[in-house]
Image (tube, rainbow, N blue to C red; front, side, top):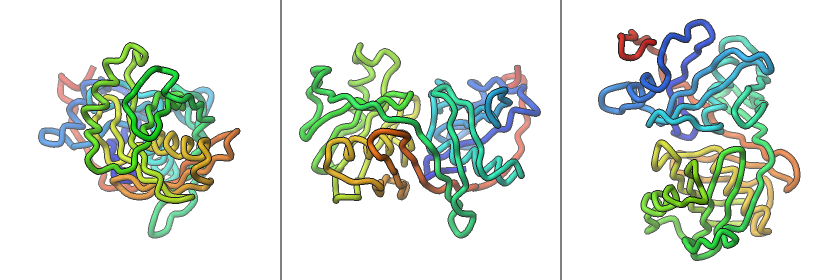
Length: 261
């Protein structure tokens, strides 16, 4: 499945949890020797929500949450007959989802929590030319405001941030261009993956910066390399992310001794 071409292998582990998730993910995400994806979304049983969602990045590391992945998980459960409004247990807390449409585009709206924004200048960081911010959505984001996405070596910039002791667990890094009162354009680099076609939590982080700085007004259209997302935020409560959840294909794989426990 994919959300704005941020693609995932979805695995329902509630009935069969034999696979070693890290080994399975490294194999499954390999675009030449496996299935090919940015990560694995594992659906597990939960005692506090409808299901637990875990996000394993392509390199085997685990992310706290994934805004594009949770939409895919919500569609998976909806099509399995488990409800149009599903709440997931994640490492950032309970995340609620609702199916908006099942037509030509299968669309899901997600309550993403409250963005906590800090000017990056307070971290003595000089990587930006039009402003820089740190946004905490339960997972970390550096948002760099630029006049253009083109010509920015986002990969090199992001790799430098991963060495910064102020981000001991690394950080996602995004470049955002303010194109209008309700429009932004974004490029993403994700921990454990690299450059991606979209990042749901990153889109929310970038939109939140635009709203908090007074340069844009909710709702905001976020144009990412893989498509279009919409972020709503009143500046105080939950931010909401709406976007597509695309089911590409289903398959079966045999677990050999290396992938099984």
